[in-house]
Length: 307
Image (cartoon, rainbow, N blue to C red):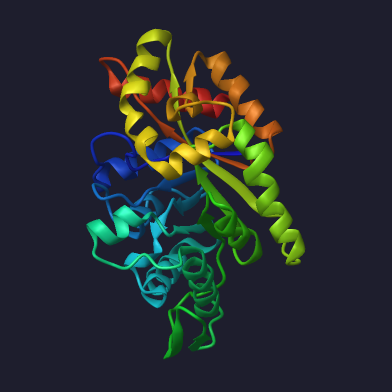
């Protein structure tokens, strides 16, 4: 199982490009496998953040988790990603997803229509834009494209879909290279997420897919205080129906139950449990607790690296 870390803040104050560079440098120095950036209302643009991370790293995979498809025309995102791929080569992984109705319609005023079909065709357009032929043609139910297209350095790249429901998981296996799920514990990965993506990939004749999940991680000696902080901070997710459903697929009752919180031994045990459940990529989002947030994050990173 590969372990990656978010280098642009996911839970707290937004990161600037300087912080992204320093965190990415640290992740690579610790020997971890990958660095990830989110796309959030309070966060940096994902492609810009990945460019910053690329400037200070040489080895690790760099990926987005995940860019909302409804906010970008697929050729626009393809151009951005392929431009960066010209610098990063095979280190770039593009994580995309539909986001959710409240974000797309209420916040941005864009119609949230047929998300699984939308994302499926979106991936097909991204694939066509990466073949270097100078033209993209697509005639689908959502996208109808007949366009000149070219970007120096364009080439096929791994694409992962943020997926939780059955239709999106099916698309992740059939047309993408796997999934990035959120708020999934070991039970959800083993019983639902992993099997759905793998079965879809096998039926489509695709290679074995990646099965990833985003998990808050905290190494602490003060378990009671850390669990209290985790429960309070992530309580908002318990009120969102889509996350309620995915938490219910696993063995916990609330989003905080998915979080990995405890001693170094406890964290290592949970990592092994996720791997045994069939997870291929754990995307750790450090959740710093206590008065010294920097020390808390550093301890969590060191534990993840020592796994």
